[in-house]
Image 1 (tube, one colour):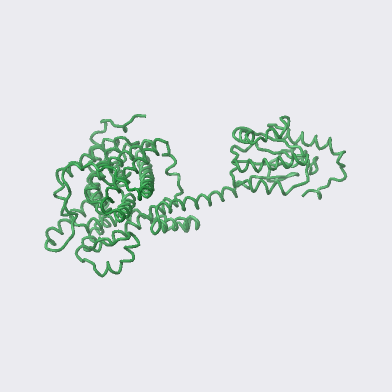
Image 2: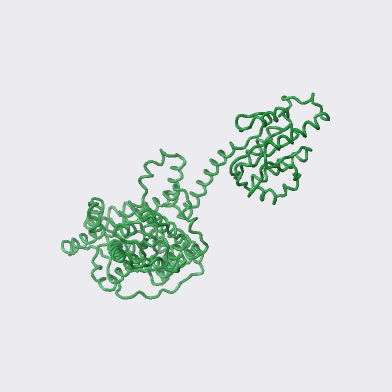
Length: 564
């Protein structure tokens, strides 16, 4: 595996055009997310440049465009708010340290080859999580949309202060924010490939504020520092170290999910396959460097990636081009960005929040599955009002429990214990005759498919239904996987049979099931002559045993009514 991404110049024209177009879209988004987070417009721009450059250079998805995104901004905003509240002087520096740590976590995830597991979450949880982030972003933009500073307390603080915010509305700034949202909502899709609506809204809003509202008190993003960013040394606080590590883990995990989901989108558009572990390393390096230079955290951006691909980008050259174009803008044109109204950026961020909400699934989740809808709504509520990591943890736990229940109920149907011919088990004519000859003294225990731990109860239940038998024939020929709990349940059934002087035959035990039973010591309990590969042979030997010993037991005492 090469260290850098797949870079070649055979598609140079398409890559340059794709990178320039992606940069045009990235500019307003970087400014928007920088201001929305509280770190400032410069942090958003440098995050877009540094994360985008290094993720493109070292990542595993050639066409992926990485930059600050809505979900990453929401988490970073909360990180800044909590750390600056506890440490007014060093809080922002500590927040950038969290970005560095998040990058380190991502590099570790990639090095441990955990990429393929990151997106293995139920869609209900991912949908609820992303929708919750969208709702948070919408709520947090309420104050700037109304022309006021955001109150303390994040989401809850904004909701509690909503009457005050409405009472103190700034009509001119709200007009600019509303105009921005209107442009984004009603912009003709045919024109998007010529001029991104975000850039148009930025230009129109700035021109109106400059030429028509120049004498009014319109808040702008202010001065953007010209020149290269200064190095931000890692800053820690003994009392906040645990909080910082947890925040970094959440930020890193969210960045992994965000990036790899976008990589899947890129795969579907380019008909290629990304390297998920390499992509996580690239994302980690990008966030580590971004944090070191006071930039925002970033991840794979769906909008930028799709536009890049649609306009010709096919290799990492497009991502590198985009970063260099933004660098030129910051170093040479930043003085022209200072007059952008904050309300315009609030309108753009509000529209991003609306787009993040999974409206399609929200409208039909209850029709697909009430349980799925409950999980999704619960994850949304926990994300908005409690905590992001709690939301994901609870959502995944509940979804997995419900899945295990369904699988266990389904697999339980494949556990059958019979002493006579049963239509639910496919028996050949000879096997049917053998069971009839046994007259209830041979118990055929048939299992099929993966035996997960939820099936253990069914094994015990089926075995306990029939008590009066002499020989247990345990057919595992169609069991590819035998879980620990199910193995122990089978061990109990075999040990109980042996303790009561009953014979045990094992049929078709092989592969993982054989290894598991051998490690448990079950193979020492059952004689090697009683381990056969064919069910018919096992039943024949079992019936022969019954015939040999039936005189001692008394054939007349055996009747179907004696079977439990």
